[in-house]
Amino acid sequence: MAEGGSSKRSEERGQEARRISLGVTLPTTFAASVVVAVVIGYGLDRWLGTGPWLTLVFLGLGLIAGIREILSVLKKLDH
Image (tube, rainbow, N blue to C red; front, side, top):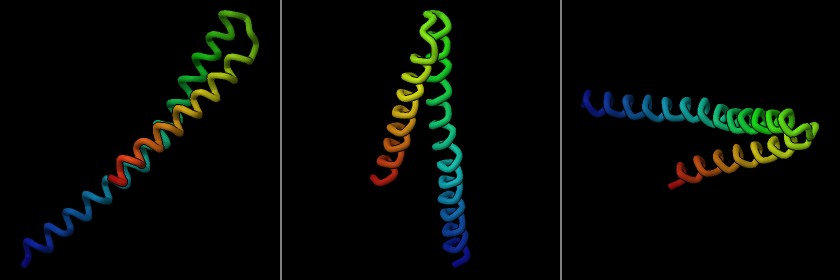
């Protein structure tokens, strides 16, 4: 009987660790997508002298990429 309780607690800890990992991974992935895209857009703006336009375009692309990645991870969790 003691092994069954220990196994159940171990499984609960594993699930809790997965939730914590997901809670850290999703916002980090989203932020990284946005930051990388904005840096690329800003660099292109400076290089091409196009003002804030490419920064804004890449900001939008970064937001879309971040949202798609979050949805992809959440979809994998449902399966």
